[in-house]
Amino acid sequence: MLRLGIDIGSTTVKIAILDENNQIIFSAYERHFANIQETLRDIINKAYDEMGDKDIDPMITGSGGLSIADHLDIPFVQEVFSVATALKDYAPKTDVAIELGGEDAKIIYFSDGIEQRMNGICAGGTGSFIDQMASLLKTDAAGLNEYAKGYQAIYPIAARCGVFAKTDIQPLINEGAAKEDLAASIFQAVVNQTISGLACGKPIRGHVAFLGGPLHFLTELKESFIRTLKLTDEYIIEWSCDECGGRKAYHT
Figure 1 (cartoon, helix red, strand yellow):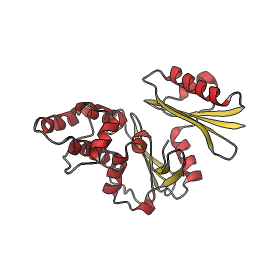
Figure 2 (figure 1 turned 180 degrees about the vertical axis):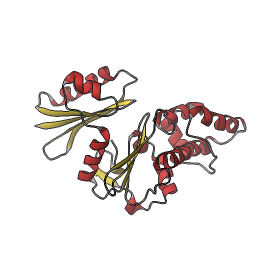
Figure 3 (figure 1 turned 45 degrees about the horizontal axis):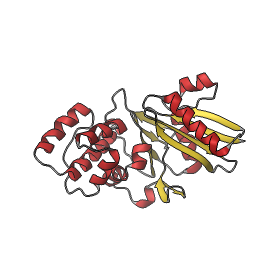
Figure 4 (figure 1 turned 90 degrees about the vertical axis):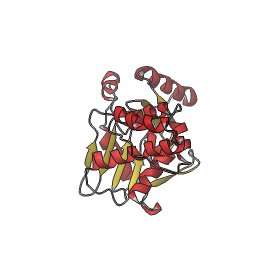
């Protein structure tokens, strides 16, 4: 029997189908634009078209997954437990996991038990914040990532709130600051918000795993974390991913 994992996040729907050897044989990752059921149905249909009838053992996780799990009568797994279980299996050396989603951010400590730090109702420093800031530079998150590759300077920008960040960025735009520098500054603001707002002084050290869409797709954001935390390669949890074309940070 194959296993089907479904992750319903605040902005995206992800599924992965694993065979008996724990190998991914189908996966999909799509934004749902608040149409969760339709997006999930479309992804499942794609899997069916590709794989045909299969016996599967499904489970759902994610911030938006509980109601779907109840509706479909599928077991629900709390997302921190899901992440912790996966890392213990795939990357047992992990000491700290940093996960950024569309509207939430988490730090999970694995030393001396599991301790989770999570943002509250504000989406500052998350994927939605990055999208909002990218629009100020008339680009998207991927474009922001490309700009950040050529930065020369970092400006102080607040990431706790999009309104505050815009107040910091707009004068810089008006003064002609380079988009490359603004993009890198936005990523650094996310790093600062995550470390100061979630870690609250507790050290992030040892082997660190980077999770979530923003940290997977935005390489320069991940590099900002690595620079700030002064991580060497041996302390960055990575995996071998043939589908990704090389070694990538763990992602969900």
